[in-house]
Image 1 (cartoon, helix red, strand yellow):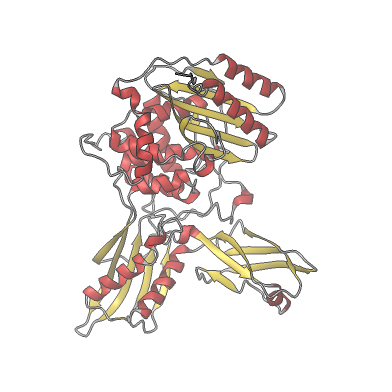
Image 2 (cartoon, one colour):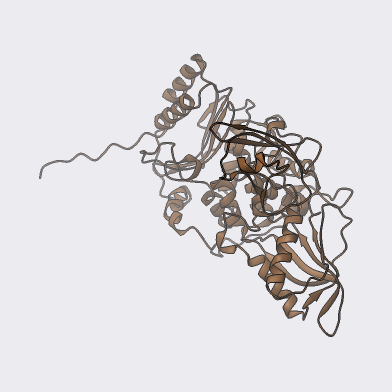
Length: 518
């Protein structure tokens, strides 16, 4: 069965009001909905100047540009500049991951994490067996983006044990992270990104945004430290390669991952000789399931649960012991909130988790009982190619976040997708639009058109040599889908200025009202 057929199973009732959690944005959202209200005015968009600006910039060797502008209620784009050519998308890839997740799962979907056990409970409250936690890909466990939820999961586990009468565990704490295939870093990602804090792998269990804080001081290095002296969250089992020089002044550390081992890290750089101040650097958390098990054990002991010789173990494959008695289910924030975090802050982990959730729900389960990234992508791309009549060349994605340089898409593919999402029932279109930061005010687009009167919501995307924007513009009573892509970029500042000029040419500020004497 195709993904589109699965989507057809999801029904929406537009009469049911959506709980808008970002109420300050709601008046702006209404502006974007004007075309469907019958109050639209006739627009006068002149694309000639915009095309001239793009051509002149390309003649200067600035970048290769692709632009597609599509009024939401028209049948074809208003501006199509290299609209069908292939571009590296960077983080505008997240548009597809988040939109597809909303369509497939619904705005109120919550990632579950199961809490249960296998074994027997004695009359005096001893669990003779394993406490088992089964993850389903929730990217928000102990996330910095949800500070009010810190510790709630651990306390919910304790309360579940307490209500079941369990006061002691004589077994193991087992964390099952096998819901997603144990791929580690994606082969499609640049080798230099492996191990970086912005490029963590996604697993069936994720913790603290899958980011680990690593710390060491010059004094500790001088004393012969063979590994960092500070790790948070605590994650045992790493092999460390230390290449730190002690110099007169200046601190600069870098961390990288070994290509063939999830747990091998190289810490390199310089530290000022004699300094006792610990230098902290972030990298990916290589074993979030084990880190979760250890933190959970600490919490349970503080709350009075006895863990006599209780071992913590983590599984990333289907060899984990089966949970036989379910005690409780911890639920993530709603998908509408997770999508906002993903797009507003451009969090790669969230995008990859959204992609995999789509595959796990609608894809055919592969050998081993999980869905690979490639399978999830196949399902996603098939849906959008069919829905928007796109060729394979116009939409070829290799990840859900945009880190991969292998991914290619056309400006037209972006605007066609944005237009399709906009025309969906409000329970889908609303949270998607609200997930995009407002141009000139918020997130990664706050410095784009900061003084403009234009109401626009864009997702940005930038990697080396790439600067992209895509989203919605409300102008003169109409809503437009816009994609501005720049590849082979030589200077980011010049490219942004050109894109600003293009937007101002397409959507000029209304002249100020003339003041007359009465």
